Length: 408
Image (tube, rainbow, N blue to C red; front, side, top):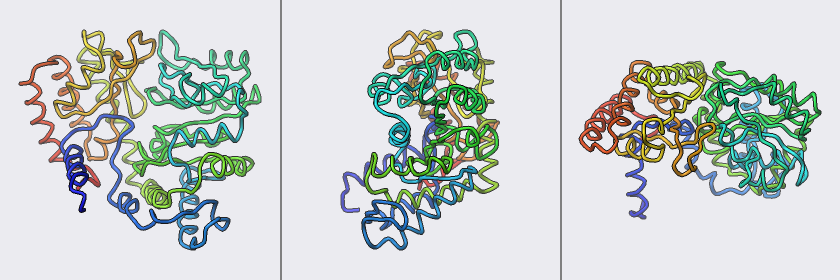
């Protein structure tokens, strides 16, 4: 690479990923094969339209790649139709809104402070600006989804679309119940499984495909693919969804991304991947249990999936100072609001912690107990540079022992 300035920064980022433990639930390591597909001449091609219905010539191989990606997605998730063109999760959700709703229609999704996503109707997002959004929360005592309360809200508000899915909810979501509620009020049902798609493939979380009109998932996170998204739907919605993606919200797909998605879907169909998904949940549970034993307040008392949240304000700190202290010590996390958090989003009370990336490195229960101990050591000694240095040394040794896939 002749651009030494950028090349050196990429080298530094590679080193950072190699030498630090990543506990951000939405981050993972794509395989060398996935990364190789991203860095190909497919980047040079424009392919507006769909296979055999393009607006540019020279598509004979591109069409085959997209067809393979679509068929692999359908088979992996048991879906009737798949669209592999969305650039990312938020645009994919936007396409669903465009397919089923008109501006101003009412939508009902999980509130961001309870663990939902911006695109589920939060007021500063397109979904809350262009649509009449109502939001359900977790129960104030259990911090769990209350399906009776959600049903009651749905019957009162009568939204045209109900959204289920989360970015910071540590428990299983009952998609069948959401499907029943949506049917009762004749609403469309969108399931956003961006965080848990890999767990669904592994059989450790219920699939929404039989119950939802449309399922959206990103292709990174627990699927370990490139940055991108999939839309899975019933055949009756296929034309609406495809038209909403193109020409509705975007032009030509990123063909190198489509190829990388195809590669990751093949990897996800393997027995090894299913074992990976099961271990992700085991590792998250171990860390959450260990943190609880050490006196930390874990939101909802634990986890059923790949992530958990802890309350930092009870220690006299906030998520911002805690995440920075951990980063200085070689552990990458993210600050996050917890349910009914009264602190501002820039300095929330919570930390969001997850196991996908460390599990991709091959770490298991023993290593998770060690990591929980390192978290405790830092969080109880924020500001102590000597402790930071000690933890950095242990982290480096652990990372050397468990190399990150695709990070060369």
